[in-house]
Length: 195
Image 1 (cartoon, rainbow, N blue to C red):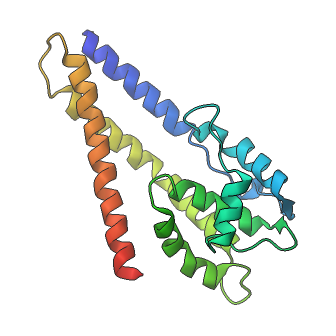
Image 2: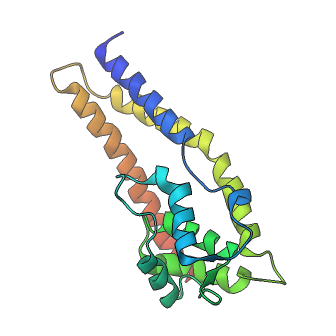
């Protein structure tokens, strides 16, 4: 097996392992009681710490949560307590803000919160959260397949030479970046059209 094939296999294995370890908070693990701020940050840190890039990074701070409430991205807590629905909204915010501006996150969440937060007439945020988690889980096989295709394309794009491995990795990361860039643009275009 050529050195390049070995690196490609190692990369595929590492990516597959990472995808399989993608952390989400199962709906049944969200406490069915209201929590104080310290309990919220501890809960988020416990369940989402695998998604941090660096160990010293914070998942959510008290300041962030307070700012989300002041900006009306997150409904205000009731007597300083956060409901299970608050936690689910915070999880959405956490993931969305990693690639969207806060104003876009607000645009996306506002109609959902208006219609579904503590709703008695419609599905509540907990129902929406459960459905979204299930939908996202169905995307994993396609994500793995897409990444395998990108790796195959990137690793077949350069002849063996002194810097071929670094060029192949650069090509793979550029393909991932292009994918993210185009999807982010698409999200922004849809948000601008809808809201």
